[in-house]
Image (cartoon, rainbow, N blue to C red; front, side, top):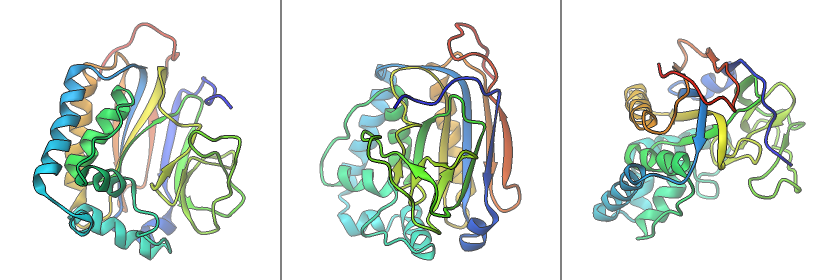
Amino acid sequence: MTQLSDGADTLTVRIDDRVLTAVPDYVLGVLAVSAVEVAPAPPTVSALLTAAEDALHAAGLDKAGVAGLPGIAAWREAYRTVGVNPNRFPCAAESIARRVAKGDRLPRINALVDLCNAVSLDAALPVASCAVDGITDLVVRPADGTETFLPLGVPEAPERPEPGEVVYADADGRAHSRRWNWRQGHLVRTEAGRHRLLLTVESAHPGGRAEVVDALARLAAALDDLSDGTRQEAVLDGAASSAVLHIAGPVGSDSGSRS
């Protein structure tokens, strides 16, 4: 299974009201980039990730300490609220922080994935990169159980999200995540090549909006050296739960402007 086809000029991102009712403090920051050549991480990004790992190593946190970080603790409670056991299915930020807190290093994947991991470790928030070539809409909503999810790395083994499980879904009945931000799907993986990307930062605690905005700023600053495409940001929450992001321009184009 290949990634999604090219062709979309806009991407609508929305949070379903049922999600906001369950977790009123949920904030979703998004950064859409029209064209990025995904390549191995340059020294600047590698240094950011190493520094974030070193800081977590120095903090000396155990598993409980990681779970107690404010951003992660709020996600654990949000998961419980929507019926997910965070001990069995930790959010994306907790998963990588646990690994690093044990003294490990994260695998180096590419510039965009490594950048998101660095910002996630620093912020203790889920940060992800999604290739959205050809996707016109994404909504964070409870699944109805009919969606198809292709697991990362094993798209030949499709899954059905459980009814009520929060997922990122599109209008074609595809789920691009499982259990909110626990696991990303194969179709939106960020791999080598030129792609339209959607970077996401999520918080679930009171006052988290400021931390989401700060994380988006860090991502945008790093993208100055990684992308020649146009960019557009939005922060979604209970006050403004949808945004239309303009990502026009062919993925294969060699020109673009920053905004």
